[in-house]
Length: 95
Image 1 (cartoon, helix red, strand yellow):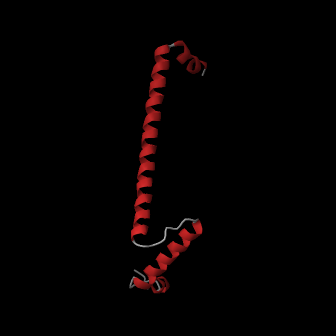
Image 2: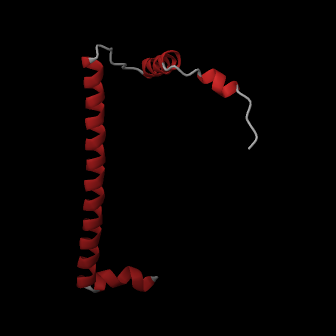
Image 3: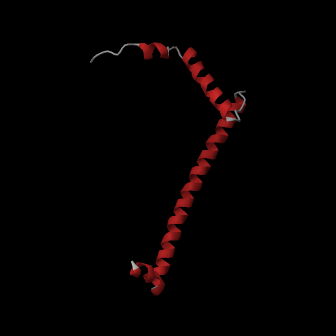
C-alpha cells in the first residue's frame, strides 16, 4: 500500500494521468446530472402548462397533490367504464 500512496508523488506523469482521468470522470458525471435535471425541469414546466391551460389549479403542497391524485383516480374509476372493485373481488379462475 505504501507504493500506491507514494507512486503518484514520485512519478509526475502518473500523477498528471490520474488527475486528468479523475477530471474526465467528474465532467461526465456532472454532464449527465445536468441533463437529468434539465429533463425533469422541462417535464415539470410542461405539467404546469397543462394544468394552466386546462383550467385546473396547480397543487402547491403535498396534501393538495395527494388530494388531486385521489380525485383523478376516482374520476377514472367512475368514468372509465370498468368497475375496478368488481374486478378485484372477482374469484380467481383455475387454469
